[in-house]
Length: 154
Image (cartoon, rainbow, N blue to C red; front, top):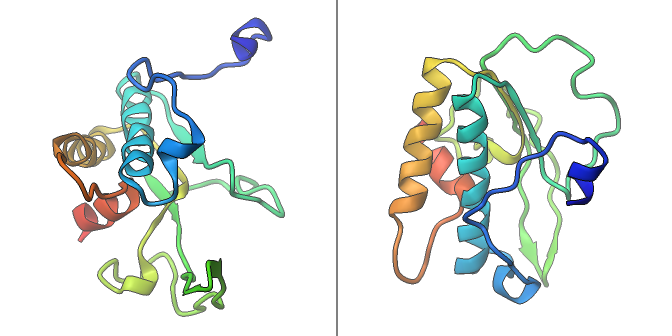
């Protein structure tokens, strides 16, 4: 309500409901269900003809990521990976991972925590496929949006 009162454009998924921190522990079923709602939100906005820049709250930009015109229909964050070591993440960025890297190379998967997507028939079809796969999951061991996006892109 605070964003609305201040006149700030925003989108709230009416199907999300109240979610607490216990339900969304990283890579838990609750977390994976929550992050799949990002796909639904982006698909809704793309369906309205809007281009979307999605930036997760835990992403920090050291410079304006949109300073240069974006020419591609979708621009994902690539590069690097994290290795789990005593609950901390540390690994160098892989300089060989760039925009024309193969998606099937696990070091070069896209990161769904930061991307820009233009609304057009191709991007709508992509997000419809990812959204459908997110929504078709059931039972324990749900998969997150990033894993599904990378599987669809392969």
